Image (tube, rainbow, N blue to C red; front, side):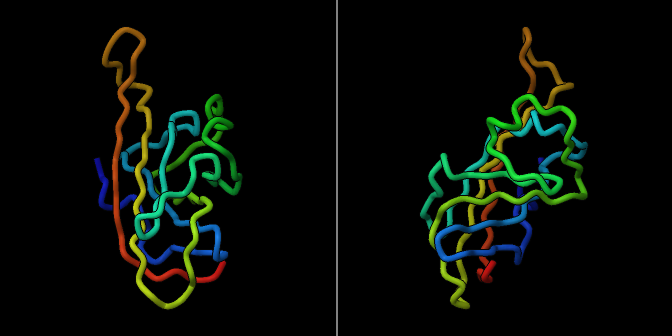
Amino acid sequence: MIPDRIIEQGTLTTTGTRAAVEVRIPWYRALPASCIAGATLSIDGVPAPVETLRWELNGRERTFAEMADDTESWWFPLDSAVLSGDVPVAADGEQHEVAVDLTVYIPYIIIGDDEVLHIEEHDTKTMKAVAA
């Protein structure tokens, strides 16, 4: 719904082997953590391995599987979450292409028998990485 604002410009951080970027919800209402179905992170065309991806929401870092049953933590439209993964990027002052794919479920929009709407959005931004 709002894919061009998923990645927060200027938020790419790196340890050299692990990168992180702040992301915003592509929906106009808050969603519980259980509705964040997954994401991917690529830097300069190099994807972070799925098993290394972590999602930090409200100060708590977890895998997507660990959030599957969490209906207590909420992602609000004005709040950023942090998506991170093992992908090498240098804090070298150069511009890097950051790509994020995000899938979220919208639990209150029923589209079939026991099926809720899910949206898949993509955003790409170019920015410099800073050391974490």
